Image (tube, rainbow, N blue to C red; front, top):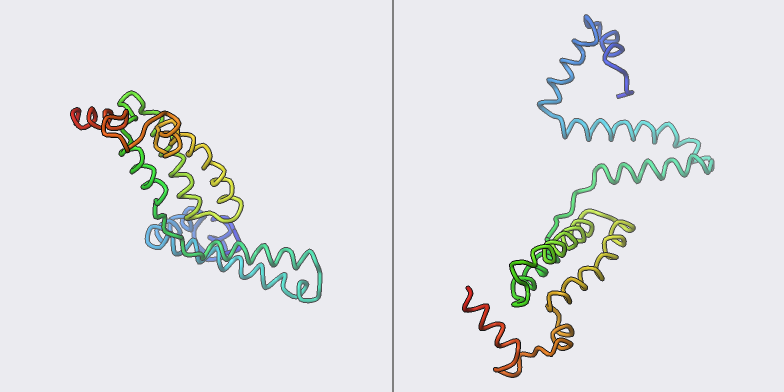
Length: 181
Protein backbone atom coordinates (compact mmCIF):
# COMPACT_ATOMS: atom_id res chain seq x y z
CA UNK A 1 0.00 0.00 0.00
CA UNK A 2 2.87 2.35 0.70
CA UNK A 3 4.53 1.61 -2.65
CA UNK A 4 7.29 -0.61 -1.28
CA UNK A 5 9.34 -2.71 -3.70
CA UNK A 6 9.26 -6.52 -3.63
CA UNK A 7 12.50 -6.86 -1.63
CA UNK A 8 11.09 -4.58 1.07
CA UNK A 9 7.81 -6.54 1.08
CA UNK A 10 9.71 -9.85 1.35
CA UNK A 11 11.71 -8.52 4.28
CA UNK A 12 8.57 -7.28 6.05
CA UNK A 13 6.79 -10.64 5.54
CA UNK A 14 9.86 -12.76 6.31
CA UNK A 15 9.89 -14.26 2.82
CA UNK A 16 12.97 -15.76 1.19
CA UNK A 17 13.46 -12.86 -1.29
CA UNK A 18 11.78 -10.24 -3.45
CA UNK A 19 11.06 -12.79 -6.17
CA UNK A 20 8.87 -14.79 -3.74
CA UNK A 21 6.91 -11.64 -2.87
CA UNK A 22 6.52 -10.87 -6.57
CA UNK A 23 5.18 -14.37 -7.32
CA UNK A 24 2.59 -14.07 -4.53
CA UNK A 25 1.59 -10.62 -5.79
CA UNK A 26 1.26 -11.80 -9.41
CA UNK A 27 -0.88 -14.78 -8.39
CA UNK A 28 -3.20 -12.46 -6.47
CA UNK A 29 -3.36 -10.04 -9.40
CA UNK A 30 -4.41 -12.76 -11.84
CA UNK A 31 -7.40 -13.42 -9.62
CA UNK A 32 -8.46 -9.91 -8.58
CA UNK A 33 -6.50 -7.41 -10.71
CA UNK A 34 -9.06 -4.73 -11.63
CA UNK A 35 -10.92 -4.76 -8.33
CA UNK A 36 -7.68 -4.96 -6.32
CA UNK A 37 -5.96 -2.14 -8.21
CA UNK A 38 -8.93 0.18 -7.82
CA UNK A 39 -9.30 -0.62 -4.13
CA UNK A 40 -5.57 -0.22 -3.51
CA UNK A 41 -5.54 3.18 -5.21
CA UNK A 42 -8.64 4.20 -3.24
CA UNK A 43 -6.99 3.16 0.04
CA UNK A 44 -3.86 5.16 -0.82
CA UNK A 45 -5.93 8.23 -1.63
CA UNK A 46 -7.87 7.85 1.62
CA UNK A 47 -4.64 7.64 3.64
CA UNK A 48 -3.23 10.74 1.91
CA UNK A 49 -6.50 12.57 2.55
CA UNK A 50 -6.43 11.63 6.23
CA UNK A 51 -2.82 12.79 6.56
CA UNK A 52 -3.50 16.20 5.03
CA UNK A 53 -6.95 16.73 6.52
CA UNK A 54 -5.85 18.31 9.86
CA UNK A 55 -3.87 21.04 8.06
CA UNK A 56 -6.74 21.64 5.62
CA UNK A 57 -9.21 21.85 8.49
CA UNK A 58 -6.97 24.43 10.16
CA UNK A 59 -7.06 26.62 7.06
CA UNK A 60 -3.75 25.81 5.32
CA UNK A 61 -4.65 26.77 1.74
CA UNK A 62 -2.07 24.47 0.17
CA UNK A 63 -3.50 21.57 2.17
CA UNK A 64 -7.05 22.55 1.19
CA UNK A 65 -6.00 22.53 -2.46
CA UNK A 66 -4.36 19.12 -2.08
CA UNK A 67 -7.44 17.67 -0.34
CA UNK A 68 -9.62 18.89 -3.20
CA UNK A 69 -7.31 17.31 -5.78
CA UNK A 70 -7.29 14.01 -3.89
CA UNK A 71 -11.11 14.14 -3.70
CA UNK A 72 -11.35 14.76 -7.45
CA UNK A 73 -8.99 11.86 -8.17
CA UNK A 74 -10.99 9.56 -5.89
CA UNK A 75 -14.21 10.58 -7.61
CA UNK A 76 -12.69 9.75 -11.01
CA UNK A 77 -11.38 6.42 -9.74
CA UNK A 78 -14.75 5.23 -8.49
CA UNK A 79 -16.95 6.89 -11.11
CA UNK A 80 -19.31 4.61 -12.96
CA UNK A 81 -18.43 4.88 -16.64
CA UNK A 82 -21.08 6.41 -18.87
CA UNK A 83 -22.37 4.34 -21.73
CA UNK A 84 -21.46 5.53 -25.20
CA UNK A 85 -24.72 5.53 -27.16
CA UNK A 86 -22.95 6.27 -30.49
CA UNK A 87 -25.83 8.61 -31.37
CA UNK A 88 -23.81 10.95 -33.58
CA UNK A 89 -22.10 8.06 -35.40
CA UNK A 90 -25.46 6.40 -36.02
CA UNK A 91 -26.94 9.63 -37.37
CA UNK A 92 -23.88 10.24 -39.56
CA UNK A 93 -24.01 6.70 -40.97
CA UNK A 94 -27.71 7.07 -41.77
CA UNK A 95 -27.03 10.34 -43.61
CA UNK A 96 -24.03 8.93 -45.46
CA UNK A 97 -25.86 5.75 -46.44
CA UNK A 98 -28.92 7.67 -47.62
CA UNK A 99 -26.92 10.07 -49.77
CA UNK A 100 -26.99 9.15 -53.46
CA UNK A 101 -24.02 11.45 -54.02
CA UNK A 102 -21.42 9.37 -52.19
CA UNK A 103 -19.73 7.23 -54.78
CA UNK A 104 -17.61 4.12 -54.17
CA UNK A 105 -14.52 6.24 -54.90
CA UNK A 106 -15.42 8.66 -52.08
CA UNK A 107 -14.44 6.25 -49.28
CA UNK A 108 -12.18 8.71 -47.43
CA UNK A 109 -14.86 11.37 -47.02
CA UNK A 110 -17.43 9.28 -45.10
CA UNK A 111 -14.66 7.50 -43.19
CA UNK A 112 -13.34 10.85 -41.99
CA UNK A 113 -16.85 11.76 -40.87
CA UNK A 114 -17.15 8.46 -38.99
CA UNK A 115 -13.87 9.11 -37.14
CA UNK A 116 -15.02 12.58 -36.11
CA UNK A 117 -18.44 11.28 -35.00
CA UNK A 118 -16.78 8.49 -32.98
CA UNK A 119 -14.46 11.00 -31.29
CA UNK A 120 -17.35 13.26 -30.30
CA UNK A 121 -19.49 10.35 -29.08
CA UNK A 122 -16.64 9.01 -26.93
CA UNK A 123 -15.84 12.41 -25.42
CA UNK A 124 -19.49 13.07 -24.58
CA UNK A 125 -19.82 9.63 -22.98
CA UNK A 126 -16.60 9.54 -20.97
CA UNK A 127 -15.16 13.03 -20.81
CA UNK A 128 -15.81 16.07 -18.75
CA UNK A 129 -15.74 19.80 -19.36
CA UNK A 130 -12.69 20.55 -21.44
CA UNK A 131 -12.59 17.17 -23.20
CA UNK A 132 -16.20 17.55 -24.31
CA UNK A 133 -15.63 21.15 -25.42
CA UNK A 134 -12.62 20.10 -27.51
CA UNK A 135 -14.59 17.30 -29.14
CA UNK A 136 -17.51 19.60 -29.91
CA UNK A 137 -15.08 21.85 -31.80
CA UNK A 138 -14.94 19.01 -34.35
CA UNK A 139 -18.62 19.47 -35.28
CA UNK A 140 -18.01 22.19 -37.91
CA UNK A 141 -15.66 19.74 -39.65
CA UNK A 142 -18.34 17.05 -39.54
CA UNK A 143 -20.88 19.50 -40.95
CA UNK A 144 -18.45 20.35 -43.75
CA UNK A 145 -18.17 16.65 -44.63
CA UNK A 146 -21.96 16.35 -44.71
CA UNK A 147 -22.13 19.37 -47.03
CA UNK A 148 -19.51 17.82 -49.31
CA UNK A 149 -21.66 14.68 -49.51
CA UNK A 150 -24.70 16.86 -50.30
CA UNK A 151 -26.23 15.40 -47.14
CA UNK A 152 -27.71 18.68 -45.87
CA UNK A 153 -30.79 20.47 -47.20
CA UNK A 154 -28.83 23.68 -47.79
CA UNK A 155 -26.08 21.95 -49.77
CA UNK A 156 -28.63 20.18 -51.99
CA UNK A 157 -30.49 23.44 -52.55
CA UNK A 158 -27.24 25.25 -53.44
CA UNK A 159 -26.47 22.48 -55.95
CA UNK A 160 -29.92 22.87 -57.53
CA UNK A 161 -31.10 19.48 -56.34
CA UNK A 162 -34.65 19.13 -55.01
CA UNK A 163 -37.11 16.39 -54.17
CA UNK A 164 -40.02 18.37 -55.59
CA UNK A 165 -39.69 17.66 -59.27
CA UNK A 166 -39.88 14.06 -60.40
CA UNK A 167 -37.62 14.85 -63.32
CA UNK A 168 -35.10 16.84 -61.24
CA UNK A 169 -31.45 15.97 -60.69
CA UNK A 170 -32.16 14.34 -57.35
CA UNK A 171 -34.83 12.04 -58.76
CA UNK A 172 -32.53 11.01 -61.64
CA UNK A 173 -29.66 10.28 -59.27
CA UNK A 174 -31.88 8.21 -57.01
CA UNK A 175 -33.07 6.24 -60.02
CA UNK A 176 -29.46 5.51 -60.99
CA UNK A 177 -28.65 4.45 -57.43
CA UNK A 178 -31.68 2.11 -57.42
CA UNK A 179 -30.61 0.55 -60.72
CA UNK A 180 -27.08 -0.02 -59.41
CA UNK A 181 -28.32 -1.63 -56.19
